Image (cartoon, rainbow, N blue to C red; front, top):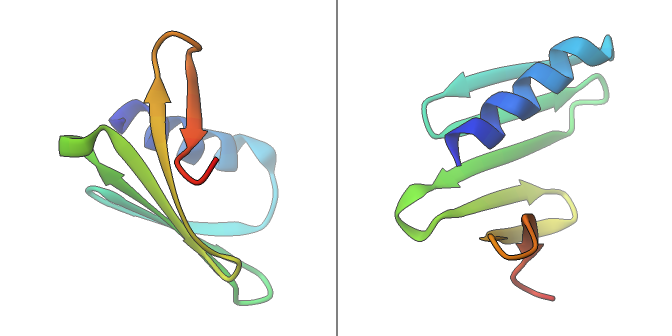
Length: 74
């Protein structure tokens, strides 16, 4: 789960897009030029990643058989 947050952070840096980000341990906050934010929270005990955005909250669990992060809402 930690590697995913680091990969997201690296992708933001490499993209050249104007996105501010802050990594505070288990929480990665992305802030866009229009003021909107996406908050990505690591839930290690549940092996999940939670994402909060204007569109709502989303929980993702890793499916090792498919090697994919799957939205718990389907």
